[in-house]
Image (cartoon, rainbow, N blue to C red):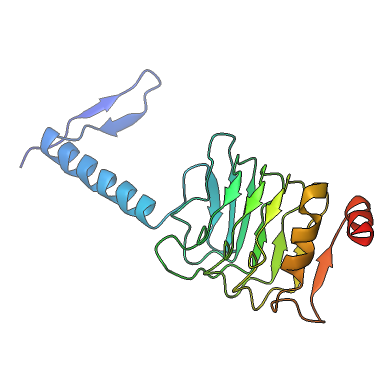
Length: 193
């Protein structure tokens, strides 16, 4: 077995030189570990904290919800995405349910929410859609959100979407103990409708 040579740097610090065979094995192991960490890890442009269950995503380039969200995430904060449409099953592209309890999609340029866009988020309690530019909301947009208790729509929809917001909020998901939050402008639009 080849022994590593000891060498010293400019400051006199000593280190052991790793023989080529060991270096190759070490590199292979490190690469494998990195691939495994990414496989169950964090989506690109996101920061994940498994201990708290929080995933935070910030980007100006992406136009869709990351498909590889970790199953353990209980809170997802997405800001700065250029998502114009939340499609059906946006949060469960492979049919799996996520553990999300809180979801913030504030400031993402969302214009359209299709029916059952939040399907697969059966535990979701809080949804923040504030500061978007909603022009169309399907009547069943919030379908499947049986645990939802808080919906924030501050400064998020244009006059053309007032009737659709009213219809979406009139669907069976909304119960008396649930709360929808609107800004002053939105309340005036709904009252005028």
